[in-house]
Image (cartoon, rainbow, N blue to C red):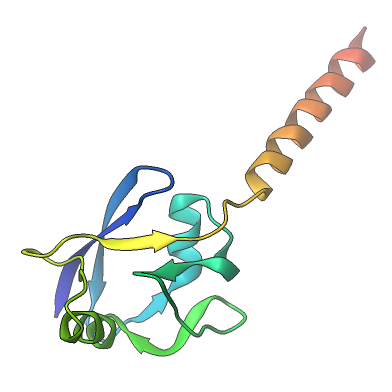
Length: 113
């Protein structure tokens, strides 16, 4: 079964919706990229979820995650519930790539002159 899950990152005041299958393992790397967060630091509803080197949860599916949060009275991100809260450190890679792009442009302009 597919479901729409709402995610909200309070530190960025940004909300997104994603469509996930019940049996799909959590892709925390994808969630991190959506909010420009460091994937190693991402937490959902304040819970750190075990993940592999590819930032995909090794054993947690969307169905099991929603069931876990629901049983504890936490938001599930599903219709009739508040969004799942996403927290983590802001990724610095976006800043580095913008700086590198500006540096390349600067060097090209200097080279052309």
